[in-house]
Structure formats: structure tokens, C-alpha cells
Image 1 (cartoon, rainbow, N blue to C red):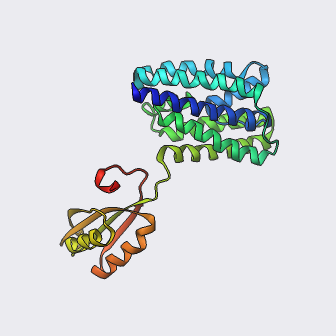
Image 2: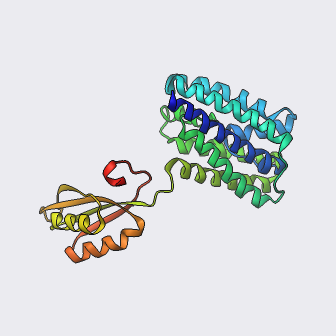
Image 3: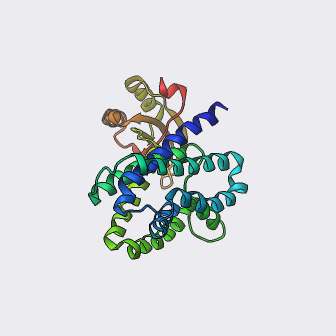
Length: 276
């Protein structure tokens, strides 16, 4: 119940941010996002019917489509998030003024704020756009990824925006979508500074102990074998903050100049020993 309540809180914040971005940056400047939100904006513009109503009505079929796939909790939170988005859109349109009429600023800030709002909702077990649900369903029947299907759908949406609003608005809409996508990834994956390190060496335990002594980081030893030489080797695995990479390089160089190591980004790290 505690987790569910936290989901509701963050979904409410996410819905408000998305509505703020739509009504204060994007909709007044005839800039859209992809998916159901973009279709709803254009439909509201052409029919003069409330945007919130389109957001709810167009999302309902996709949410029912997701019932068997994602379960009751997802559906409840998704309905709640879509409903809150519709309410906040109506509230923002009547009570919050347009921030700017500059198209580039609207695309940048509107896309960024929208992405943060959508990311908060996605990170808390819900969604506000049924396009992702449809893409997940189609990806199981056809040899295309979810991302490819979403991009294919959005190409037609942005082409339609070009016809409805003009091609300059369509290009700004594409920019908004790209910025929002990046913001969503940042919210979901985090701004982690950690790096995952894999070091293959003949002096595994000596190198591992040097890392423990100098960086106070735990390591894991993994037995490995060279594909070309067939020689037995030790892989030393550890995670260090980006700022300590230079110290790690110095340690590896001092212990084994012939060691091979790779560095990868890490989005999240869990574990009592690492946090200590």
C-alpha cells in the first residue's frame, strides 16, 4: 500500500508537469508530441473540443488492450494518470499563462518538462500514452522492436502535423519529441556517475587488493580464459565513480601494464557494501 501511494504521488506530479508543458509551451505554439498526445492535440485543434476529453477517450482502448499484459495495478495507475493529465490540462489552460511564444524555446523547455513528467509516470508503474502499449503488442507479432514501431507511428503523426500546422511546426514537433525522449530516459535511468569496470589480467588478486586498499571499493574475481592464447586469466570486476577513473588507471598500470580493461556506464547501483 505504501508503494502504491507513492506511485500515486509521483504519477500526480508527472501528470501536472506534462500538462504544464503542453498548455504553457506546446499547444499555444502549435507544437505537438508524438503518440496519442500528439493526435489529441491536433484533434482538439481541428474540432475545438476539449483537449482533456481527447486524451481520455483516445487512451481508453489502449489501456483495455494492456489489461492481460500488465495486470490490474498498471491499469488502475494508468487510468489515474491519464485522468489527472486531462484535469491538469484543463486547469492549466484556464489558470496558467503561456510562458513564451518563441518556437525554439517552447520546443526545448516544453519537450524537456514533458519528458520529465512522462518519465516520472513510467518509472512509477503507469503510462499516459497508449502508443507504447500498442507497440509492445505489435512487436510480439512482427519482427520489429517496440522503438521501431513507435518511431514508425510517429512519422505519420508528424507528417500529419505538417499538413495541419505547417512544416515548420512539424519540425519543431520532431525536436520536441527527441528532447522529451531523452528526458524520459534520464528520469528512468538516472544521472548516475558510476562506471562498470572489467579488467582481465594475470595478476588478478594482486590488482584486486590494490583497488581495495587505494579506492576502498569491493571487487569480484571471475575466472576467465584467453580465446587466442588459451591461458587462464582472472577478470576483476568493480564499480567506481567517474571521478576516480584516473586513479583506477594508475593502479592498473602500476600492477599490470599488459592488463586489458573495459569501461561501461552504469545507470543504477544497489548493494550495502557499495553504498558504504
